Length: 420
Image (tube, rainbow, N blue to C red):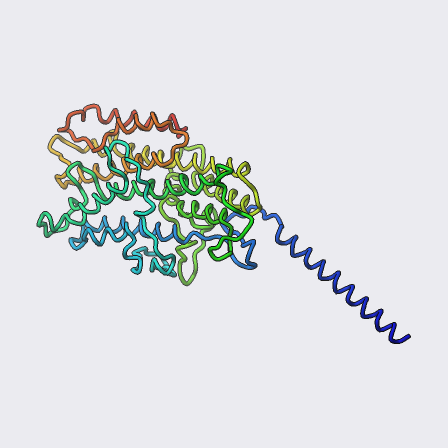
C-alpha cells in the first residue's frame, strides 16, 4: 500500500511538472509573439536573440563619417596647401578606413576609427551612376572624382605656395567642395535610402524576408536590416525627437549623433512658414515602419509611411534649394554685391560668397533627381534649365535675366511640392 502511494505521488509530481513546462512554453510563445507598441525612439529589441537590439546600420554610419570628413578635407584646401588628390580620394574610395575620423564632439566620440565600426565601406561604390541633369554625360561619380582631383592638384599644378579659396574654385565658379558635398547627399544618401532600400518594400516580389533571422549575426531579419539601412542614410540620433542624450563618458556615433540629412531637417524646420515638420514627419515614419516590420506587418501597412518619408525627403531637398536661392536673390542677396568687374575666380569676398551659395543650391538640385516622387521630371528639367550649369556673372550673357530665372525656378519648386 505504501509502495502504491509513493507511485501515485511520483506520477502526480511528473504530471504537474509537465503542465508547468507546457505553461512556460506557452508564456515563451506569447512573449515572442507579443505586439510591440510604437516607441518614441528608434530602439527595437531582437525577436531572435533575447536581450539584444535588432537595430544595425553601422555601414551607413561609416559612410556618413567618410562624407563628413571628405567635406572637412576639401574645405581645408583653402587654408592648407598640403591636401593632395590621393588623400582626398581616400575618403571617397574608402582606402584609408584604418584611419580615424576628424569628427569632433563633447565628450569625444567613443570610436573614431572607421574600420572599428564597420569594415570595407566607401562612398564611391554606393554612388549613383546616372548622368547628372544639366552636366552633359557626367555622372556623380565622374564629377566628384574630377572635382577631387582639381582640388587636390591645385597647388602643385599651379605652383601656388599660399593657401587660397581658389584651390576649390574652378573657372566656371563652382565651389567644388560644396558641389561634392551636396551632390553626394543625393547620389549616395537619398538614392540608397529611397531608391535601393525602401524600394524593396514597395513590391511583393522584392519584399525582404521577415520571419527568420538574417545570417548577419542572427539578431535581425533581412527586412529589419534593410529598413535600418535606409534610416542610417537619414543619419538621425536614435532619440531624434527627444532630448538626444549622449553618453557622459563618450559619444556613440552609431546612435547619438546627427549626420547630414537629419541635420538639414533640423535646419529647415527653423524656417518659419512650413505647415509641417521635417524632423517629426520623417523620423516618426521611420519608427512607425520599423514597428510594423517588427510586428510582422507587410507591404500594405508600410505604404503610407514610405510615402511620407519620400514626400518629406523630396520636400526637404527642394527646401534647401529654395533656401539657397533666397540667399542669392533680392536686395540683400549675394548677387547684389556683384559688379561688372567681378569674375568667378577673382578671389574676392563677393565672388567667393556667390560661388559658395550657388554651388550649394545647384548641388541640391542634382540631389533632387535621386528622389523621383512628386516632382514631375519635366518640371525638374525646367528648374535645371533656369539655373544652368554655372553661376552667371554681370559680364556674362544672360545675367540680366538670371535673377528672374532663379526666382522662377524657386517658385516652381514651391508650387509643385507644396512648400508654402
